[in-house]
Image (cartoon, rainbow, N blue to C red; front, top):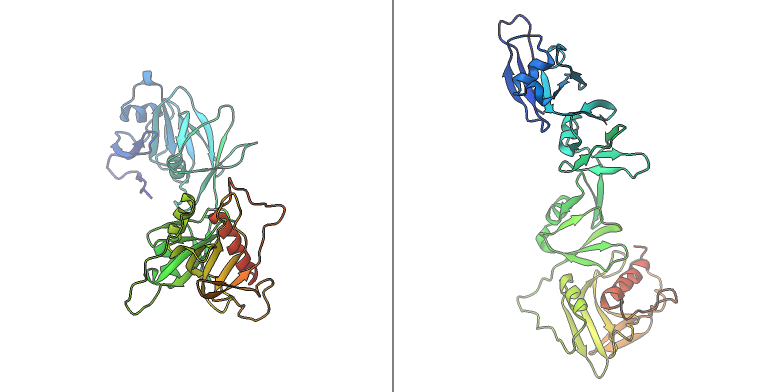
Length: 368
């Protein structure tokens, strides 16, 4: 906060005031009188009467008063002045404090300074019959005529994020992945990082990514330990048949190893190290989707997991008793199908949308 100039009577020194334009960039000026008029303040600021300058005195208590040309200012009440060439003023109110602003527009930054509003508090423009608008510092607001433009600050919003069961709070609407994991007590470089958003397939994040906490339906960040091995490299993944471009792009973005295998006729999409939510006896599985030869005209149905998924608390998972051999391994079949209200649409549905259904089905069984 800028320190305001103070004025002292009888000090033997010339009184000093601060004067700024509409940008509130104040500069100090010495006066030859302790009772300057509005006209005097304007002349000191470099204006002549033909420019029709408007002089606004900013009081120590935060109030504002317009000074007429011959009206004397009480410097004990405030030694800061805003001077601007103006044909008229517009009424604005900042947290209930009204003033006549000598321009047709005002920036969010100036509103914040005039209202002495801390940077962490959001500012909203409130107009009758309109939704409240959040005003950023860089915004320029054209002031409506014939009324009072109401600007009000509010308590800082707190955004929340669940990182592997650890609930974080943020005063800003975005948070860097590295910061989120560090605050939650995890080494950002030791984990596969998965973002879960309601209604969307899970998405793998990189350490350098930023999470927008304003995203509708944002739920949690799940972590899976990266592979620890004996130094041997993983064999190159098989690509026995291509998928849609959107599918391959999405799968690459997950950061999980994936393959397409044509095994004795059937075509399988295999996703390794697929993370599953807390509540199962394992944290990852290998996921398999049966891709029809005429996909996407024909739908992908059900999904398969190896090792089989079992709830940590015990109990039977409905419609998962059947196993299906895939490339020599017994995959657990999850018999889950689209309902009549959401039939497969070849123009819209694909591996990406089916994985959203897979994730939902797996999470539902453990109340995630």
